Image 1 (tube, one colour):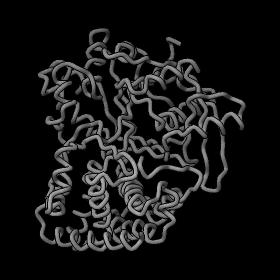
Image 2 (spheres, helix red, strand yellow):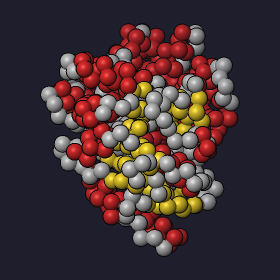
Image 3 (cartoon, helix red, strand yellow):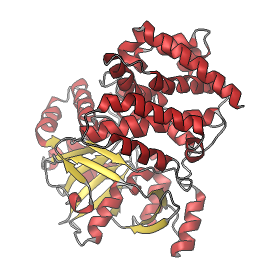
Amino acid sequence: MNHKSVWMHIGAGSFHRAHQAWYLHRLIKQGDDRWYIALGNIRGDVSPLLNQLAKQHGQYVLETVSPEGERNYETITSIKKILPWDEKLSALIEQGSQENTKVIAFTVTEAGYYLTPQHELDLNQADIQTDLKGRASTIYGALEKILEARVALHGKPVTLLNCDNLRHNGERFRHGFLSFLQQKNNHKLLQWVTQHTTSPNTMVDRITPRPTPDIAERVKAATGIDDQVPVMGESFIQWVIEDNFINGRPHLEKVDVEMVDSVLPWEEAKIRILNASHSCIAWAGTLIGLSYIDESTVIKPIHEMAWKYVTENVIPCLTPSPLDLEKYRDVVLARFSNPYIKDTNQRVAADGLSKIPGFITPTLTECYQKDIIPQATAVLPALFFIFFQKWANNQLPYTYQDGVLDVPLHKKMMLAPDALMQFVSSDVLFGDLAKSKDFHQLMIQTVNKLEQWVSNYH
């Protein structure tokens, strides 16, 4: 397989296996097998998954389900090489340094980029400090080691492709990475990265819940395959990529990937309409005792919160757009109502501390600039505030996961008598609005109203 081109992917989660791997699999099925995926991870927590995938020669079954309940099963064949994890990331470094590795892609979640609300590298993060001392526990530390080895071996260019839900994801990752190299005084690699890599922006979309044991049972019943690591997603899928690859790429346009000059309109619509509404529904559903996104979406007041947020605030901010935003809103809410996906509120409610500044604050800010009072948008951070207070009081029905959670600091803040004032005055969450009395007032009213709604519901 040495003459073939390698797409090395860092981040062995379900999303990659239901999304990017599926597109490359489709290309192979069409007869274009010039590219394959080598899959690895920065952290050791997915070693059991990688070991099992290696036993299955990288193959696994993807189950997709439509809102009407139609299930399809496909064996994905694009991952031809599993890169086993060790603390030194030896297999990742070895593969990434090879000349035939022409794209290094990654899914490490929004929190995995360690950026401040101003999109600068957050040097206060312990993981970043660790990596500045020479470890490789983040995407930056890992890529430094991989690219050092590549430069030493041959120095051929490579595309660094961010496949995470982050606005301007290619640019923001690149700025973080170059800042990291600057902090390390690694000027030689900094210069090489600047000249010999590109970081296209992308927009990725497919709802992919955490796999549950019943998927393997359905796969076995439908296909006869005894798959230990199947993955499941909705039937909807989308991938929009800025066509800026430095050393060749697969012919992704042949499998319906949208290769464009700028992903901006798609990205803004996705992040503000889909991602922000998703979080809104997860926080609201959790507060009234529901476990799943679909059952939360069909509750009339929750559906209304999401619909109003998009209609009254997001669409005015994003107009004009090449996309039909009303139609996109309706498709998104139909996808969330899919009763067969069983996506959990726990999964979608995660990382709220990154999602508020990333997905929600831009709409709040732009509404004020347009003289629109963002009543419908204020509902989202207000829901998170009530949710987060429940977390601080140990009253959530599940473990809340957040990449930037500082447990002692956030518990102290949320249990303080003036918790709401501290919350709305956080420039980390709300930027310049943290100083706005109008915004503070709006949030106090919205929180009061929603607390009433939650207690009436019970």
